[in-house]
Image 1 (cartoon, rainbow, N blue to C red):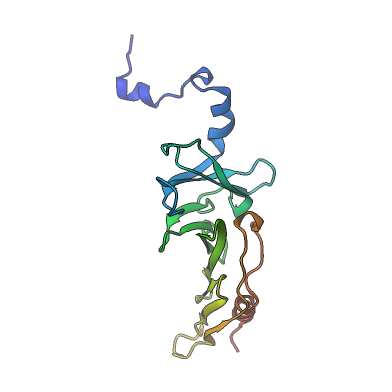
Image 2 (cartoon, rainbow, N blue to C red):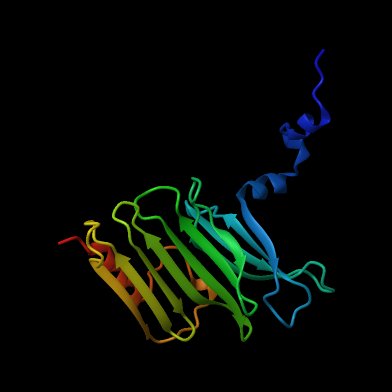
Length: 219
C-alpha cells in the first residue's frame, strides 16, 4: 500500500463538513481583505473586505468594519455595493492598497485580455464622519498602435491632470500624432462611498481627453 507524505495530504481538498454553512456561503466570494488605519479617532485598524457581488455579475462589494480587538462591539462602518469590476479571468480581479494620509486605494483592472488594458484606482478617505470617494486615477494603453492615456482627479477639490500620447506608426517620425498634457479644475464634490458603483463615468475633462486619444488616427 502506498502512503502519501503529510505535506501532500495537506494539499488534498477537505470534505465539505470541514466548513460551516456560513463559511461555505461567504468564503468563495472573498477576493481580498486587509486592515487599514482609516479612522483616526477609533482604536486599532479598520478591516476592509472585497467580496464578489451576489446580485450583479462581474462586480464586487466593499465592506469596512471596526477593529474586532477594540473594547467595543464590532460595527459595520460602511457598505458599497457593486463598487468595482470583478471579472472571471486573470488580470480582472480588484485589489486593496494603502494610500497616503490614512487613505485607502481600491484598484480595479482589466489587464488580462484585449487591445486596451486598463486600471482604475479609487482613493477612499474618511472625512468629517463619513467615508468619501476622494480621488480617481484611470489609465490605459494601446497594445497595437502604442501610446497611453491617464487622468488623475482629486474629487474633493476638483483638480485634475491628464496626459495622453500616440506615437506615429512611421518609425522615422519622432513627432507623435497625438499628444496632450493638461490640467484644470472642476467643481469638487463630497461623494459618499456607498453612492459609488462600478461603471460610473470619468470626470468630463478626463473623458474629453480620452475620446480624443482613442479616436486619434495616423494621417
